Amino acid sequence: MKKSTWYFEDFYVGQEIALGSRTVTEEEIIAFATQFDPQPFHVDHDAAAASIFGGVIASGWHTCSMMMRMVVDGLWSGAAGMGSPGLDKVRWPQPVRAGDTLTVSYLTTAVKPSQSRPDRGVVWSTWQAVNQHGDVACIIEGMGMLGRRPQENDDA
Image 1 (cartoon, one colour):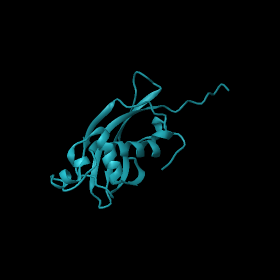
Image 2 (tube, helix red, strand yellow):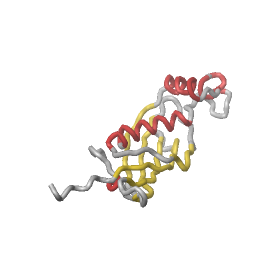
Image 3 (tube, rainbow, N blue to C red):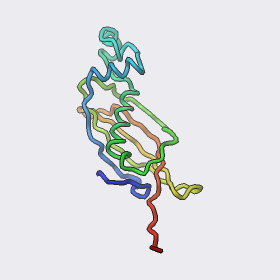
């Protein structure tokens, strides 16, 4: 579902939003890990082959970053977003490998209007990335702040 502008009021518990898919390349896995998470199983073919993973895998933080990009492109770029106070949980149950195609979904799990700031509300959500085999590669649970829909001015 693509909207021009998403406000707090557009989110409801149980709402699922498909955010698309992307295929991961070995070049981007190694480039990200070289800069941000240079553990041997992310950057070195021989070390990765000898690891418990049996080959190069993406950093979990790379997976989160790819998911974030898909959430922004598919949802937040058209939202009255006000940032996030944080994440509650991040899990990587399945490694991401070169050639994997990740499909990301967004599930609204709770919504609450702010009591102290009537111009905003908080939306709790679960993001999930599933690979082409149906295996869950990453789950992120967190919250985002969104602006409330502007009220129509009846005096005009």
